[in-house]
Image 1 (cartoon, helix red, strand yellow):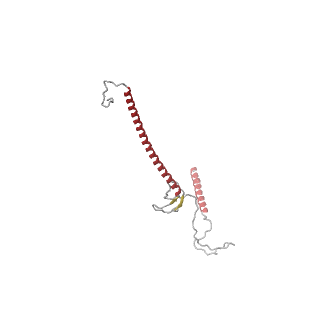
Image 2 (cartoon, helix red, strand yellow; image 1 turned 60 degrees about the horizontal axis):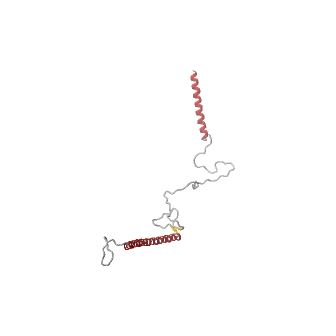
Image 3 (tube, helix red, strand yellow; image 1 turned 120 degrees about the horizontal axis):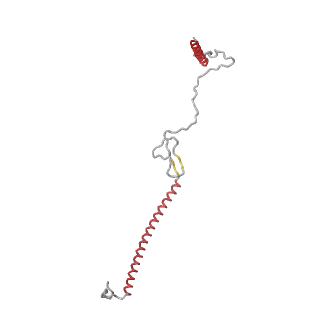
Length: 183
């Protein structure tokens, strides 16, 4: 009999708890308050006290929302120059489509022309140095040949002088008809 009483008590607690939750949900859904029936109502049929009555009109309000963020393009291209120069004019707008070989920027020519003249002067200086080096090389070659010729002449002169200073060797010497020692 004791178990039957325990079973009844726990069943009663469960039923009361579920009933309380259901009543609480109905109250939160404003189920116990007076409701306005759906459909059109006549203006001024329901008393509002001392407050004035105003007709309601349906108005379309544009939807706008403020947000903070960054916008990135789907396709983007970065422009860069191989040379440094001042930009004089820009011939396009951001987001504008451009065609192949279309002039986009105009650059200042003064700096570029100065660089071109410097490059031409450097080429001319290099040509002059190359010509001077070839002349110097040919002079050295001629000078070397002259020194070798001079040394050969000096050697021949020394041999001739030695032969004249030595008495002739009768076994080796033969006289030519001119009176000079033979070979």
